[in-house]
Amino acid sequence: MNLYEKIDLYKTAIDELHPFEGELLTQIRNYFRISLTWSSNALEGNTLTEIETKVLIEDGLTVGGKALREIFEALGHANAYDLMFTLLSRREITEADTLAMHRALYKDIDSKTAGRYRDRSAIITGSQYPVCKVSCLPDEMKNLFSWAVNERDHYRPVEFAAQLHKRLAFIHPFADGNGRLARLLMNAVLIQDGYMLAVIPPKLRREYVSLLEQAHRDDRPFVEFIAERVLESEREMMRLLHIPRPSAE
Image 1 (cartoon, rainbow, N blue to C red):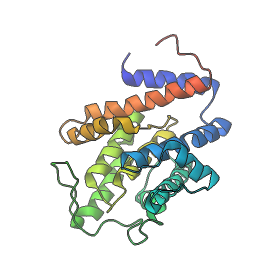
Image 2 (cartoon, one colour):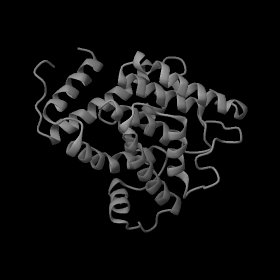
Image 3 (cartoon, rainbow, N blue to C red):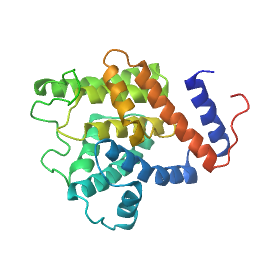
């Protein structure tokens, strides 16, 4: 049994006992809101702990000694996460959705660049590959979402999610927040297809960054890395819901 077959086997086991809708959907949304916000920000250098993120988002209590930007990053990500769940009513991700999600992420950090493509050149530290030129950004983004519409059903859902992440990251359309946004879009398409979220813990940052860089040449290891994160979320959900491992595994 390969990785993707195991993911679908676990998904079936979860869906049979607890369909991905109603109360379970609400619980999943609440459960991952803190962990995804904390982990995604931590991958980018935010020093808030998971507990501090929870206190800030759920209780509205600020954390002493933390930079205001880090607080706004957590609040902005939580807002973008909530917006992500409004996309469940349709099985698509549009350019307008992407701009709105970035605006939610960055409106309190930099209102001038929030929800707008960058207007200057960018270099990704540590990468040997150039990102999209400013003059090509509008066309590249339109091409990205045209690809998403036309090619989505040609991939397994988890593979498509990883591909969307990779392609947006390579374009690097915004002045800041590209990694966070790529992970949000990836998870948006996962939940649209009824899959668990892919949460990348900070301890795996080096592997994650390395595989994303390698994906310029060979993206299979990166796609499999994302698939492993989905499988791990399924295992966690099965543990929380007391669902036994499938006998066919």
